[in-house]
Each structure stands twice: as structure tokens, then as C-alpha cells.
Image (cartoon, rainbow, N blue to C red):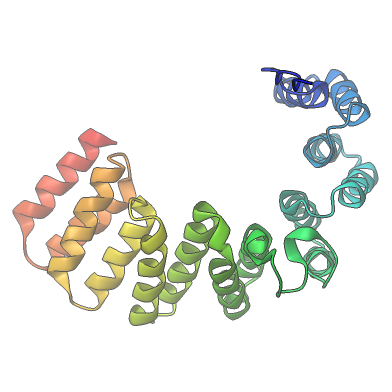
Length: 263
């Protein structure tokens, strides 16, 4: 027998979830709550629970929000964005230990498909969760912990170029702040190997090259960064700052002018 044709429309649960998000943005919290409730009833799992939990947080119902995050995690324990959102919720409430516990629980061996220990066939799917954990540790002031997590995320991100690029960029940025120029350059170049047109990675590599006094390669990287993303103000600024420091005043002025027009 012939297979049934695929429906061009998303499942009802996802439609209700989108409706809930739109109503939430419009400030119609009660209608949004009803839409999220319908989304869950129609099988939309973690995304609906996240949206609903964030609505309850906005309404001041923190206990209800925490319960919704837990229900979503029980239903879809492999959903890394839910764990990231849950930890961010705890962090916003000032519960840094609780946020860290959420990440640790999600990354326990066998806890979920996205972080089923740090070995095995699903390693690449763990990158988004580790990157979120690294960002949390960075905000908490633990840059060494953050760097370890970013590096794990980058190395585990084989299956997703975007996740991998974000993690390498985060690691490179930490190394720049630590003034570890060679390590920063290595991180940015590893990211560029998978995402050669990423303007943030090109900018990072340019900053590392400039700090190593490798001005011609830095200039080319800045040029590529603004070519890929003409409205990337930080890239225009970094290029102009380097040229000014080198005494290339006219080049710096021209770069700033081009950047202002592009942005």
C-alpha cells in the first residue's frame, strides 16, 4: 500500500505552541497559558513546557515555572535547550548552586540522550548543553571552568557546525581575555575549519593575529569578517583600531567611515 502523503502543516501541538508564544509576546498571558496547555495536551513536549514556564516566571509564579521545567525534562530528558532554559531560570533567581546542579544532572551518564556520559555515539549532540553550562560558569566568574566546558563542547560538536562554531568562538574569546594569543588563534581557526564564513570567528582570529603582531594576516581576516557581515560593527571597529595603532590614520578613517555607512 502507498504511504500517506506528508502534511505540509505542523502538528497541532506545535501550532498551539506558536500561538502561545505570539500571545505571550502580546502580553495576553491568560490566553497564552491556555494555548500552551493545549500544546502540551496535543503532544508538543519540551518547547511548550519551556514557553509555559517562562510565562509563569513572568507572572511571578516561580514554583509553577519550576514544576513545568521539571515536567518537560521528565518528558524529553534529551532536550538540551530545556535544560539550558531551566538553569537560566534558576540563575535569574540567584540560585547559582541550583543552576549548576541542573547542568550536572543533565550531564550525568545515562541522564539523557544529549549527554549520555561523555563517551559513546551521541557525543556530538551534547555540544549545546555544554556550551550553555560554559556560559553560566563564565557569568559566575569561573573562566577556567568555562574554558574547559567550551572546549568539550567544541570537540563534541562534530555533528552540528553551528554548535561547534559557537563553542570554538566562546573558547577563543576566553583565551583572548587571558591574553593567551596563540591558544585563542588556534580556537578561532579550529572553528573556521568548519565554518569558514563566520564573521565572529574571522574577527576573533583577526584580533588574535593583531595581538601577535601579525598585521597583514589580521588585516585580511578583518576584511573577510566585514565582507561576510557588513553590519558587524565590532569587526569594523577592531580593524580601525589596529590601523590607527599602526599609524595608518587614513586607512583607519576610511574604515570607520565605511563601517558607519554599512551599519
